Amino acid sequence: MDHSPVKPTAKGPAATFTGDVLVTPIAAPTGPSRLTAALVRFTPGARSNWHSHDVGQTLHGVEGSGFVGTRDGRVVRIRAGETVWTPPGEEHWHGAAQDTLMAHLALLDVNEDGSDPTRWLEPVTDEQYRAAHEGAEDAR
Image (cartoon, rainbow, N blue to C red; front, side, top):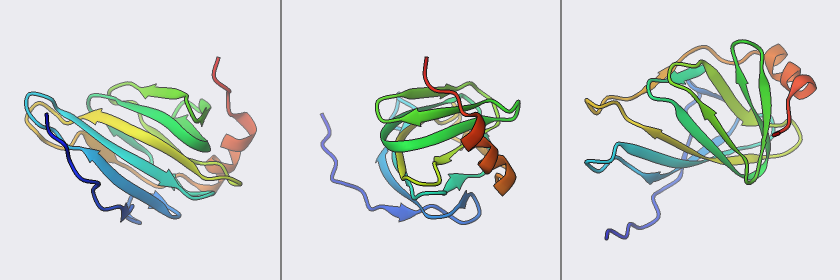
């Protein structure tokens, strides 16, 4: 067993996030596991850029309400207790609703060679973000 102290929270970089986003690391890969995990907190209106992950990503809502959107225009609402899986290579974004914060656990595996599995892309436009509020699906 390994018992780790709480790791420092850092502000998400402006190069990959719009608005204020705070990231607290939880787990780093420790062989043979390749899992990396973080608690990510989005202030109202904050969101990630478009991005994808080589081996997919699991997002588990822990507080508030937000969105996960994909390139095909599908947007799902994520709330505390709900989980969203984005498959390998699927371009997506996630963030808080305009009027509330959203926090989720972000879980993914690093690549087998240890390299970063995340491919960061362009920011989500204000128009795309506004459209998420109108067309989001609730969990079924």
